[in-house]
Length: 384
Image (cartoon, rainbow, N blue to C red):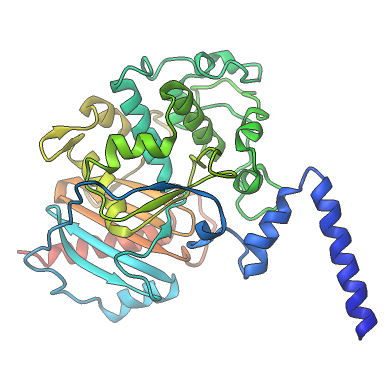
């Protein structure tokens, strides 16, 4: 047995050595940070195993007021079963800008940090709108090569910042979260994320079709960095996080050390209450307590589909007409959702470990999303 263990140890050492010197050396980090911790993909608290840039609490925190009917409703057994099966950790409903219902699971609470995953994409798009407002970027039609002249690919010169925000980049990219050899996985673990992105050519005509690609948002983040000269974290704090009164310190995950760049396509570690603030800003068309933080025209454009054959997506926001409601939402890996019903003045936040059982369907919205929208509307209907 001792010899067998020694042999296995030697094999593992050799394998790690080969990985380290190969093009897949990022898998060493993946194994140590994810797979050896019992996960097959990124997880809610994995930010603690990566470098992060601090996103401070606001200098003037603005706690959400509690609704007059706060937590007077309870979930049915059927509703609780969904959250148990999908491993929900946070459930929050904000009605008329006041917390109407709030519940936490699995040891989470109001201050618990959770990985946003792709919820962050909408934040990056908001930063694009702010950069246009501030004059750093001319418009959605400005070419990306104005900021990143080293961009490669036959159609690189045709790509605009608006193409990036609307997922119409024509960028070479494989959006695969569970394959250890995909570029999406590499982007999560490499120490030079910018290099990986610039190796992906613009090999299709941009601006023609919607195709969801995390690398596209990462490229947009790099544009904003070049245009403003500020890190995404600092620009987010100055533009939105601080004036919106975020209550708790949060983090934005980096590709390497404190001098690295943010993973723009994902990975803001924050809490349910603070995640809801951007939805409120968009619901109110860019105004926060009477002050304009983001241009209303930009928001109106963001919340409409760019392509008729892809009605589910605008400019980094998901869109759905559901039961007569024009819903817009942020979505993230493993079922992180901020779902807004503007007509009802209702914001629903759900954070958790799983989306639940997968179904083979062409519907861009997974079954759990419909369950959560139904829950939000049902609880809302209990109000007079």
